[in-house]
Amino acid sequence: MLMAIVFTYLLARVENTVALYFIGSFAFANSFLRLLPMIISYSSLLFTGNLVKEDEIVMGILWYKMTGLLFLKYLPSFISIIVSAICLKNVLKLLNKKLPGLMSGGWFFTVTSLGAFLVLAKIIPILDECFRIDWIR
Image 1 (tube, rainbow, N blue to C red):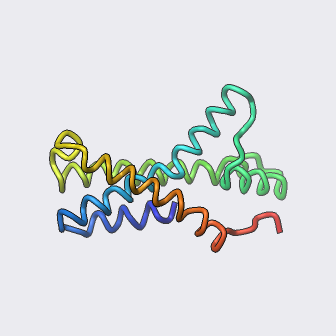
Image 2: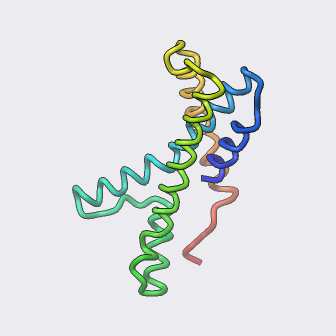
């Protein structure tokens, strides 16, 4: 979630066209990195009655068990959804403003976004291990 915020902020600041494509791709990809798992988790809750265990879900369940306050069970995941959705909305707005015709102008943004997802798929687990907060201890 932090990377979505950072890349969205960088996208708002950069003006160089080449940098806009790459930073925009990472901002776009990072916006989805927490949004999609949260959507999948809540879809699972609707269809199966169980939440898929993601970091925010586990954290919320722990907070609920510690306090008995039901709203805390869902608070971390709702924050993640809201922040990711705000970042995604701002990324799309900034890209449309700074690079008009981006989505219809060719495949470059699609390819760089896919590349960003692939790079992030390798980087995120490493960052996760280095900076993970162990909520259970």
